[in-house]
Amino acid sequence: MADNILDRFKENTEETIIDTSRKIRVGIIGTGWIAEAHLESYRHQPDVEIVAGADLVEGKAEAFFEKFGMKDVKCYRSHAQMLDDESLQLDAVSICTYNRTHAECAIYALKKGVNVLLEKPMCVTLEEAVEIRRAEKESGKVLSIGFQPRLDENMKMIKKIVESGKLGKVYYIQTGGGRRRGIPTPYGTTFIEDKTAGIGALGDIGCYSLDMVLNSVGYPKPLTVSGYKSAFFGTRPDYYPNHPEYAEKFEVDDFAAAFIRLEGDIILDFRIAWAMNMDTPGDTIILGTEGGLRIPSTECWNGSVGGEMVLYQEVCGQQTETKIPIIGGNENNFGDLFDKKIRSFIDAIKNHTPAPVPSSQIIYNQAIIDGIFRSAEAGHEIEITIPEC
Ligand SMILES: NC(=O)c1ccc[n+]([C@@H]2O[C@H](COP(=O)([O-])OP(=O)(O)OC[C@H]3O[C@@H](n4cnc5c(N)ncnc54)[C@H](O)[C@@H]3O)[C@@H](O)[C@H]2O)c1
Image (cartoon, rainbow, N blue to C red):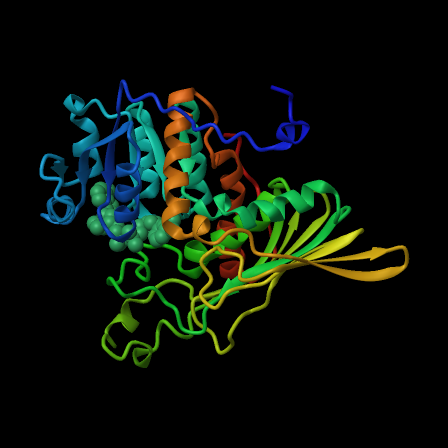
């Protein structure tokens, strides 16, 4: 049959064939809210079996798996108990614990030779991030950080636009996000207490804004930061009509702002809010010598593009604005992005390929968060120094 020349331009739609001859054995550490999304996405993978789970709260892991009719999953009272049980022959773990235990769980798992999918933020301090990186390097295992918004086609478009050169040299970025009233306490206080969360809006949603823009410009190294943080809302008993006692437990930031210098002479202007007297602290904008990109924010910032982006350029002396329509719909929903996050992690393990969201990048994200925290405490600009790791 004659070759149809147009067929050569069609996308390859061949289905990927997944080798199911040996299933990847997975354990889930921390069986709270986000663990459900991990569990559901693992169950969508034909080459994965969930064999174990652990939670510090007595009976919580058992109840979690029972809810999904998974009575055969072995349950433990801590990450260490689970990882010490060699009979499980774990290939991988998802770490879905609150921020404060991210580092100890990740380091323990990597030292046991187990691949790790670690929820965002990577951890609480830069020091912890360095220790995690060292354990990862020594282990030779895959460590991926849970930033699923990166897999959204609209987020990928931001990076494509920057990489296409349409913006020229990027010199200024404004990013962040916020909620008018959105401190995450529907399931208790693990996000607002220092002993569990360690960092508030900065770590919970600030890390998404940072990843969105830093990933698009190639994750330049942060050099200096002048940071501010406050907690004017979370500490008010009337903020929580049903739980005024939460106010006393609130020990993290509900607002943060910073001015950060990045390698490559890029200025990053950042603000993030769990609560504020405003609808949004502004869109994300990326300014370059040849063009500018506006990325609309959302009412409940969680790392998704809020509407069509606009590319501002000058064409033969005319000032132009090109609207970039939102790509797709359902394929960018939370569940599908989570499936992609889990699939890309499993593929990296099976194919011995790099982590989909590498710690070599996210350590800069963590260094900025840590820097904002330290600069705010010190009351002046500080230099960011990242130890060799
Ligand atoms: N990627 C996303 O979209 C997304 C969404 C929500 C939360 N998160 C992140 O996921 C993490 C967990 O959030 P959550 O809402 O599920 O919290 P959560 O408080 O509901 O659950 C955390 C669970 O971890 C358990 N735990 C803590 N340390 C442990 C240890 N050493 N061993 C075993 N269990 C341990 C706790 O007992 C608790 O049940 C946070 O870091 C958060 O930032 C990510």
